[in-house]
Image (tube, rainbow, N blue to C red; front, side):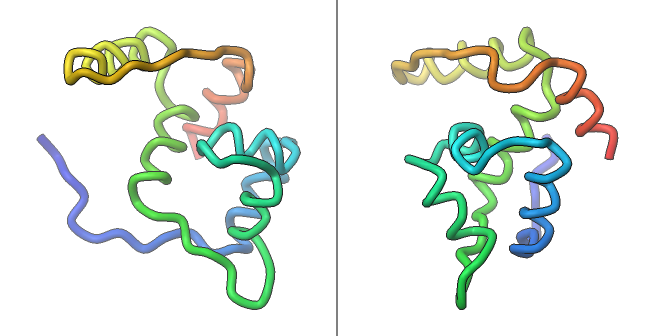
Length: 104
């Protein structure tokens, strides 16, 4: 098993650039990373002291951009095995967009 030993989060500017590359609204970005709304996402991309994206949130976000649906289903099944209850939603990102983002 390969684990992350050191994590340095992306800067506010890098997160803003990612949003622009994905061509998503702040609300869609918030949905993608599991935040309550677009105003929460904007706290990561601007202001006097932008929030930093934690490793767990970033990992989840990157997994959604990188993994195919069948791979995500395996992760969700594991979460359910641990006792979690989750409701899935699809359609936030088209598959080709996710695939092109993972190659960067």
